[in-house]
Length: 184
Image 1 (tube, helix red, strand yellow):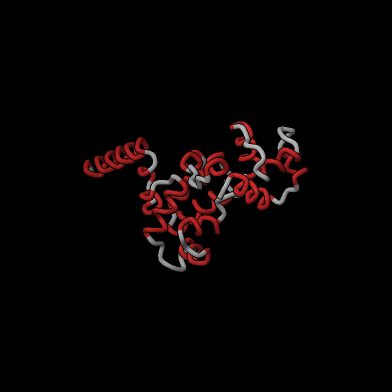
Image 2 (cartoon, rainbow, N blue to C red; image 1 turned 45 degrees about the vertical axis):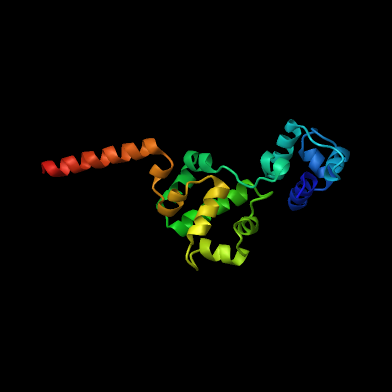
C-alpha cells in the first residue's frame, strides 16, 4: 500500500469531505493540496505528515511507511484508568489495550485492523478478547508487538513488567510486612 492509498484509507474512515479536512487542518493545507496528496502528485513534508496524522487519528510512521505498530506504554503508565487494567483478567487486560489502540489510533488500529494484522478474523479476535475462547500466546505476542505493551504484563498484569522501580518498591513493602509478621 502506498502513501496515497494509506491517506485515502484514513481519510475515508474519518468521513470528512476534502473541504472539511482542510478546515479541520487549521489552515495548514488547502483541499486542493490534500487532493493532490491523495492522487500521489505531491509528497508531504514531515510537518505535514504530523498534521495529517493528528487529523486522521493515526501515526506519521503509518502514513509515511505503512508501519502499523504504535506505543501505548506511556498511556498505560500515566493514566490511572489504564493502570487499573493490571488488576483484571488477561482477557480484560488484552481487550482494554486493544480498545485503547482503537480509540487512540482509529485511522489504522480499529479492532478489525488489529485482527487482520494478527492474521485472525475479527470474530475470532473479539472472541479471544472477550473470553469466549482461550486467549492464545500468538494473540498476546501479536498485541504486544502492535502496541508496545510488554507481553508479560498482558499475561500477568503486575506492573513490574512495566515499571521496574515500582516492582522494587512493591517487594520492599512485602518484605516490611513479612518482617512485622515475623516479630509477632
